[in-house]
Length: 374
Image (spheres, helix red, strand yellow):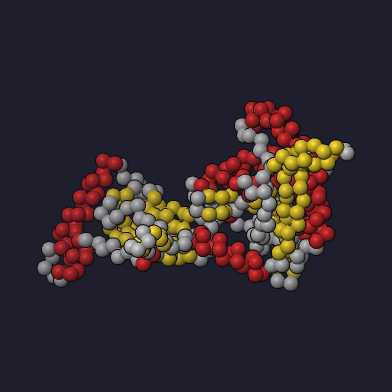
């Protein structure tokens, strides 16, 4: 029995993906649900698993091939869709397939080229994308250059960022926040928080809460443009930018206004962990009404974040740095952070953007407001 291995169904916004590297080769025994190859899409990497147990007999698409949803990419022979093959049966399956191929190859009515194709499935030759990883050496200077194709994720990031620059009137406004009240509150309750909820109390939950508070005061910052219409959202889905070794992804924390500090911290921590291990789903990476990016974890002191379309605004957090400020008529050293709000000036006026950032600043410098939701 021949079983087809197909690519999974993708989302409406993703029509194709790129096959990475096959983990199995023709003649290898496979177990149902075992990963055969990874599929890289614009947003996430998906695992394509064996739909049944048996022996992999043919690879129909090579490493680096661009495929669409539901496309057949391989065949498994002698697989049983409803049962798993015990480890002791793997060699039996493999031997049976080998014997079947040998018998087929000596049938007199089959021409030799056909029998060879059946007995030994042919793996397509490497594509230009596979062979493009090369080092070019300049013998005169002894300096090396390495070329490799951009990943689909990096290509998509480049396309979206360039599109955002061309399709929106992006402007950025800045402010600074005294982080001392938040840091004092964390230092006072972090041990109790960890013991009670099993998760650390970080800074992101404070900023998420402050963002929701400010978004409620200025709904246009939570809105988006669709053609000639303004779409106002009465929910608060926050995109949290997460940096991985493969590129930046923005998973979405749904209904952030309904979540407590522990739920927010747990959700963000889960995103960060699964983003690095490529386990985020397409649904988790879609949508969002407002985004937060924290370049401060890498030491950034000030930046202008780029919008994540179709959203109309994004908040940039930065490094906390001790600086002298005037407080009650005296110069004092405080842990300060610059905040940046990039916004689409087609929809959001400067007054609203500035007041939004001031609202966030006031909430963070009086974190009791975040606890009380006022």
